Structure formats: structure tokens, C-alpha cells
Image (cartoon, rainbow, N blue to C red; front, top):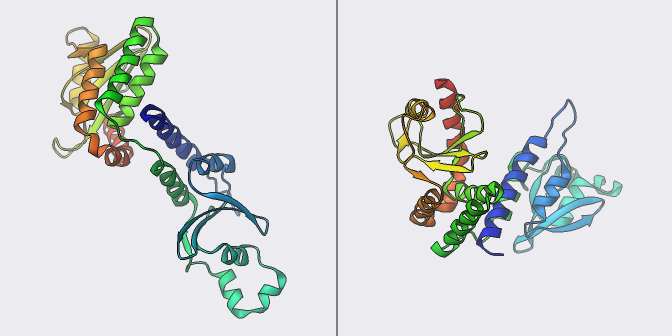
Length: 284
């Protein structure tokens, strides 16, 4: 797959992880998880399916015969051991329990457990992401700009939004919830922490899907600064710095500057985004 397809696959994987984590339920005495979602993520990894002793296993080699093994049940354990060891512990035959050593292995798995539940989902998600080539060149970004330009020419918000969302993913740009937005307006920004003790965001992007308008204001804004600027913007007393295809060209320049750090930036964006949204809600 090319860069665009790989990036879209990553976005899809992130959504799958979010949905699967939120499918985890722990009612009294019972855990549940959406196994179809887990299978979809596993299908994008190098884990291979095996059915052993009525267990649904997904395995991949580590070294020296040791395997990384996910048991697809509601607990989602991942073990570092052999398939035979897992089948003994999870689905023993009646004759296995006559061995004290086997009983200890059946009742105690701390010597082989790597993760359970949500942590296992994160491991599998990471294994899928590792298989995607997310490196890119300026030529890759120029193709995204060209698709956005075509979207403007055709009046297609779907095409504009697709390119915009791909740049947002590259730059870890997240929705910003001001609580005061006019109808049809959305604001996005990249969380940053280098301006004082409170979390701010930079280069806010304003999107109006009804008018096919995309604008950007350069700079770093605290939640208070953003409220003040947007109030003037809504009254047409302040304007954005860039509009239309200029926004995409600016985002491409930013993406080229940070290219070696894309993976690291994406990994920390979720936590920063939550802090940003919390700060904005408190300021409303």
C-alpha cells in the first residue's frame, strides 16, 4: 500500500482500538469484549490463528520456540510461552490434574502472562501499526494538497475533509471544544505545552462544512486567548491568516519539518488532547 492508504489504515486501527476498549464490560462475575472487533485488529497483524483444545489462539514467534500467544476470550490474556503450555493451563485434560506441578501451572499463570484486557488490546494495536510504512516525502504531501484542491474545485467537502483529516493525523491535530461555536463551525488545534504551565494549542484551523471554508490562524493560543480571538472572529473583527488551499500548504510544511518524529508525536497526542479539552471546558 502507498502512504495515503497506510495512513488511512492507521486511522482505522485507532478507531478500532477505541471502539474495542469501550466494548470492554465487567458486569458482576462476567467480563465481555467485542471479539469481532478484536479479530479485525488481529487480522492486520502478523499473529496467526490456531485452534487448539477448543481454544481460539493467535500466535507469533518470539525466539527459541517461545511464542506470543493471545487467547481470544473475554479476559484477552497474552502469554509468552508455548501453545502446549497454554492448552494445559487453559483447557487441561482430566489426567493432567493428577500432577502437582500441573496443578500449580493451571492455577498460577504469573510466570508467563504478558498482559490482559485493555493492555492486550494496546499490544495488538501496536503490532498492527508496526506493519504500516508511515514514512512520507514532500511528494506524498503534495498529492494530498492536490486532492484537496480538486475538492475545492468540485465543491466536494468529502474530498476536502479526507485530505484535512490525513494532515490532522500526521500533525496530531485534535478537535477543540470551545462551547461557544456558531452552528456549522469546527475548530481544531495541535496541543502544546511549552507556553507556560497550562496547556495551549497552536495554529487553530476553523472549518465550515456548509460554506466549504477552511481557515487557519498562526500562533500559539491559551484557552482564554482562543475564546477572545474567536469572539472577534465571529463578529468579523478579526480574520484568519490563511484560507483554502493555503492552509493545506502550511500544514504540509509543518509535516515536512516534523517528519522524523511523526510516530512519537502521534503516540502522545491522545493524552495532550484530553488535557486540552479539560482546560477549555473549565474556561467556558
